[in-house]
Amino acid sequence: MKWRTIFSSKTMGDDEEVKVFGMWASPYSRRVELALKLKGIPYEYIEEDLSNKSALLIKHNPVHQKIPVLVHNGKSIPESLVILEYIDETWRNNPILLSQDPYDRAMARFWAKFIDEKILSTTRKVSFTTGKEQEHAIEEVTEQLKLLENEVKGKAYFGGEGIGYVDIVANFLVFWFGNLQEALGINIFSQHKFPFIFEWIQKQLKIDMVDECRIPKDKHLTYIQTRLAAFKSASK
Image 1 (cartoon, rainbow, N blue to C red):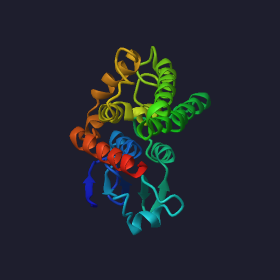
Image 2 (tube, rainbow, N blue to C red):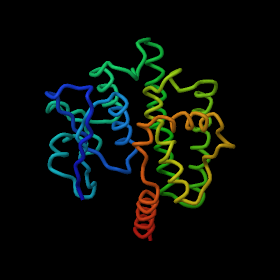
Image 3 (cartoon, rainbow, N blue to C red):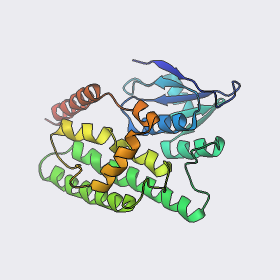
């Protein structure tokens, strides 16, 4: 099923066209929407059925044929981290997502890459493995989260005093991760284990645009459970 939603704002001129091809349960898609909402950029959201990808998605991202894709005035930008930088460089109103300081920018990119290539990648292993393999993946993602915990310790946000690039990339921890571990029946992520990340989550929850990007919990749990059931059935 595909649907289109228009999100409007007064920040951008009427002559600009912004579209987001996404999928409601994807943390990669949600981060793009969050960045646009924070910047006050109106956009058209186009929901993709990833089991039956549209011709438009394939046209705009012929290399990977994946979501998210941002289309700005007819020009296509794939890959969520690339899109976030494009948004920040194109619309320079607050919040500025990446610091102008070269070191700070480099470290923000480092942590964003760490989140995607380590934490989210290992989380997929937790989801689609069993037994000893899953136990190992749980240990691995726990250690990775400890590194992220240490990075936000003593800070309001990862980038300092205001929400920025890494906060948007790490936003999957606010809603998505808790839903996943509930569906899996595991307890990797808790306030007791990661108090500084949970302090950061409470600050995130006070931002209206973050709440607007909340994934519907019951729908998400059903979606995860359906995928897990399909995986187990295919593994037999």
